[in-house]
Amino acid sequence: MGGMDGADHEQVTKELARQSGFPAELIAPLAKAVRAVDTERDAQGRKKYCDKLYHTKTCPFCDLRRGAAQYRLGQAVDSWRAGDRDGAVASLGAGLHALQDLIAHGGLVRSVLLHRKRGQWAWLAPVQSALGLRDIDDYETMPAGLKNKVRQETMDYIKRFLEATDGAGGYGISE
Image (cartoon, rainbow, N blue to C red):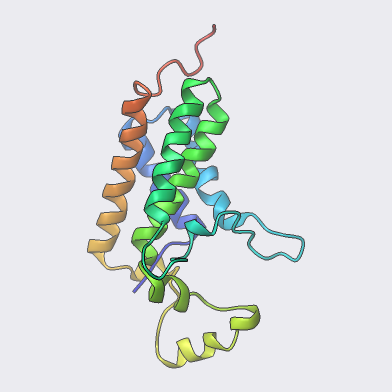
């Protein structure tokens, strides 16, 4: 059972953005934006998780990550149309991260209990290891069907952005 870490998010996003026809000059910033959610740190060096909806199922009755992804897609389109390319790319990356985590990390058990624990949850890591459970961010062990679903939904998400922005046309054209 596997998942995705920041490098996996970045790799999948770069590859599929190229295939979808995303503007070439914005692929690297998009990859940085999709990874930013996993790399931003607080003063103590812990992940910031500015929006916890990206990473875990916070509600036992529903999973809000798809809604977070859709919200971010709308933000990305609105920003693009307003001429804010950087804001559009940042929102698109955040939305992609939420979507990819929803698929790769799954529900409450996988997204919460299978992460290597630190701090108050540190006791859970040795239990997880003793049970032979791999860390959720081990992309290499993710089943092929799950990888395909991550890839398909990522591609669909990028294509929806491109369709809503006329192929993200007008980038780099002098006004």
